[in-house]
Image (cartoon, rainbow, N blue to C red; front, side, top):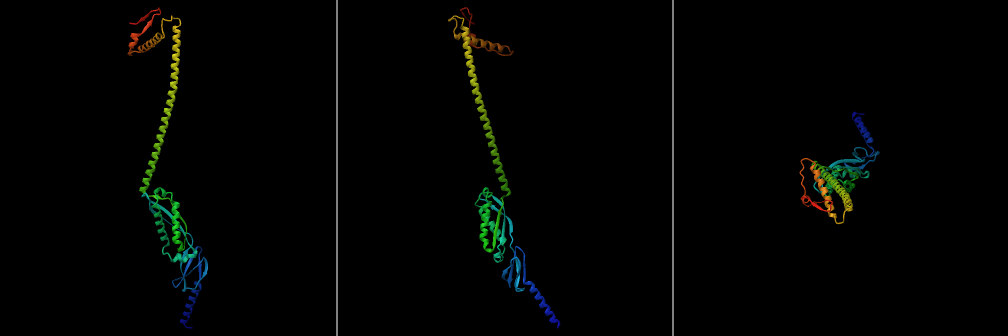
Length: 299
C-alpha cells in the first residue's frame, strides 16, 4: 500500500469521524439552535439531544435564547403643560418556541426596534397629559406600551411578558420650580391656618367681652336699683319725723348730692398739689336747711 493510499484512507477516516459526531446536536435548556443547509433555513432544535444531517450539509448557524430577557432604558417626554420629565422603563420579553425562525430572520435588531417603539409610544401618550397626570399614569403607560409591542412583535415570534414604567423624574429646572410651587402652597396653607387661628381668637375674645359686658350691665343695673331703693328708704326715713310741708323729696336729694360733692372735694384736697374746682351750681344754688322751719342760702 502506497503512502498516498494511506493518506487518503486516513483523510476519509477523519472526515467520517467528523461527520459521525456532527450528526448529533446537544441543546441546552431554554435555548434553540438554528440549523441551515447551504445557507438556507433547515430547522431548529429543542432542548436535549437531536440528530441532523452531517456536516458540511447541515450546520448550526446560531443559538436563540428562549428564556425571559429584559431591557431597560429612559425616555425624556414633554407634558401637555410643557414640562420635561425623564421616565425610566423596563421591558421583559421572550422568544416563542414555535416561532424561532421568525424571531431570528425577520428582525435584524429586535431589542433596538422594541426600544424605538417604546420611546415613540410613551412620548406620544405623554404629550396628552399634564405633569401632574404623568405622575399618576404608570399603569396607563404600561398597558399602552404592552398593547403596541404585542401587536407589532407577536407576528415576529416575540411574546411581551411585562412592561414596567417607573415614576417620572423631573429635570433639574422643573424640580426646582415644582419645589417652589409646593413650598408656596404650604406657606399659603400656613398663612390661612394662622389667619383662622387669629379669627377664632378674636371671635372668642369678642364673645367673652360681650358676655362680660352683659354680666357687667346686669350687675350695674342691679347696683343702680339697689342705690335707688336705698335712696328711697333714706328719703322716707329722713322725712319721717318732719312736718309734711317742711321739705320735699328734691330738697333731700339735693342735700345728699351736696354731701357727695363735699366728700369728693375733701378727698381731693387731702392730697398736696391737687387743684380743686368747686362746681358753680354747688356754690350758688345749694340750699341748706336749719331744721327750724327756715331755709338758709349759702352766700
